[in-house]
Length: 70
Image (cartoon, rainbow, N blue to C red; front, side):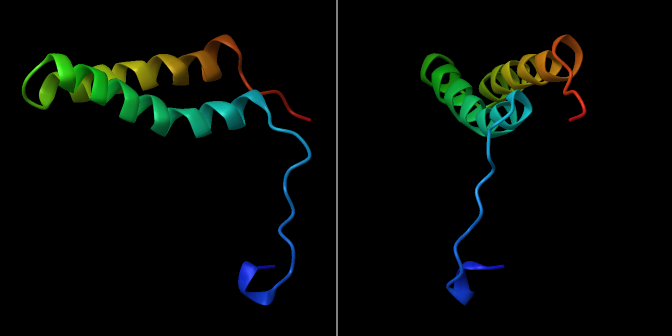
């Protein structure tokens, strides 16, 4: 099914925690990079800050609250 066919797109019935984490990681990376870039000159520290923030979110989603089978 595609949008080009004119058929409606099926949306998931509910959003799981893992889905929210996957959707939030790019937003967190961009936000962390932007905040660190505003404070520090260069690109190394902003990238490291953004990567650390995403790693913490990923560890929370995989280790602390792992996804469960339905």
